[in-house]
Length: 413
Image 1 (cartoon, rainbow, N blue to C red):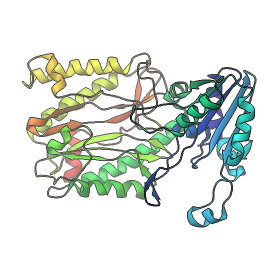
Image 2 (image 1 turned 180 degrees about the horizontal axis):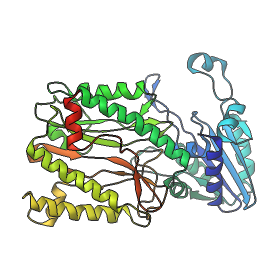
Image 3 (image 1 turned 180 degrees about the vertical axis):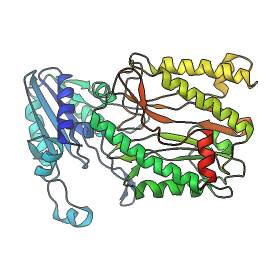
Image 4 (image 1 turned 90 degrees about the vertical axis):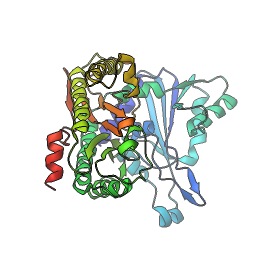
């Protein structure tokens, strides 16, 4: 994306800060995997949101004096001739400015001196202190906060995560374009899966066609680890071993997505491996599909994901009683046990404040499902929707999903 996007993102972040305060965001680094091998590097998403830079170890520092005065710095790696020959050169100062729009670029070995000078005159420091669980290892920011408490006890430490999460919920036009690119690539992968589906092979063997298709079409990575779940496996929400043999007559559920410039797509399609739904499979599939249509009709600014999910649950209660699967409303949770939506963007489960009402510019998933373990039927249908001024737009409408479309496509391959 253009640097102007990151300039605007930083401006919005600065507006959320109090006067006489520092913000420090770290790009992070790839953790060691084993021996001298590391996991693939991926930047801290809030750092990337503010800079557009995806280089390891870099640091963004912003000092806000007051509402009219602030300055920004990015600290980058010095050129290392040995590393350049082995793994590639680091960003130059000029390249960092071109990507981010930050004019002042220093080297990482200068950070401590600059930070110390500014910290001595600041009342508070903002850090990204988001934590998913108690047992997780500390992030760079969390370790940095511990150091601040020890060396600068008078400085207040504030968590900037929620401020940035609120900003990331509303996507710019350029961000939506990136998400649409990811969806377009994913669409090609889904078609290749359907074209090559057959029983008697491993789930992972069919999954490989998606891997090939998205990389062939310009995506460098997946939005998340692909779920390729056939038969009863599809009733496990996050099944990902993908190592069962696909049986004749199975439905297979693919929850997948390509990533484009770190922006995600998140799509689920469920289809019969042999190209023809059984009457029972079709009955359940149609209930889920109509449930998705209901959800689309409910999406608009001002409502919440919780309200939408409650309406879908009421619909399921009515339909599952109609077909004799349940007798009372409370039994719905046996067959539907997840929420219908989450925000989507730089993360698959994007930074967000779930309780906040939807607003124009939000991008969310729409993913109703039903999971009947005793019948080995697991069905989820998922698309990505943009919240508009008076409703929503299905960004992934080009990916086939009706019974008729699926059967026609698979039987004409």
